Amino acid sequence: MDGVSWSATLTMESVPPIVSVCIPAFNAGRTIEATVRSVLDQDIPDLEIVVSDNASTDDTVQRVSQMGHPSIRIITQSHNRGMVRNYEAVIGDSRGRYVKLLCADDLLYAGGLRRELDSFLTAPEGVVMVVARREVVVSGRGRLPSWQVGNPRDGLESGCALQRRVVATGRNLIGEGQAVLMRGDVARAAVTRGLGDPYVVDLSLWFHCLDRGDVLHLPHIHGVFTVSRSAATWQMRSQRRVQMSRFLRTQATARGYPKWVLTIGIARSLLGHMIRRGLYRVATTLPR
Image (cartoon, rainbow, N blue to C red):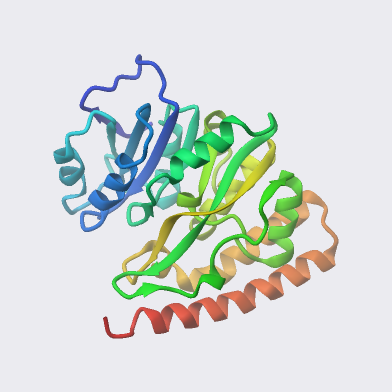
């Protein structure tokens, strides 16, 4: 790997932690401390936080380093490898039995990670992901309506059934990284397969994991997905339609879904794209 690891006390020879929270970062100096603090506030002592800095030009690394917590490990990329490769790098460098991917401007709510871990430890053997709900927050302007977020299904669901539901609805029914806890070995194996296009990097990861097993949906809200004009998802908004359609086609073809499933999924995806784009545009331009 291209990155160089820094750690206050952790070494690769130490006993692996039970949970790794993986934070890919680029020019995240404004938000990274709050994100890391939301992880440190979780009730899990056996925890590592891996931050992969993608050659930031701001003070991201300095801010994280100054926190001085023994659970934090920083990987510094020698050059900007792109968003997808940085995601793959930070997960691939994790050591935890369970892994969470957390963007550098998102937050975890207190107690959420503990609930996900406890659910994992008591889940059936075939479960590879525990999925909670999340809130969508427009930076500095409050929450979007709750009907936009969360998965309406709770309890155990097979991985293949969830994959088909995603394709048929054209939506990410799983959520972003702050809503998901994965089995570590499955997550690390997933990134070796490649995570595809930037806009669907999280969905690509989820689908690779779901190829290996089932998912447990929780009815609780465990974190915040932040929307702002500086966020990667906003910067990539013009690519969403093309990249999501390509992802749906690839998955439908690989899994032999009927053509009508793909047709309906793409139509719903396009409709969702227009609605989401309008809501985000309005929300990010309203006065604070």
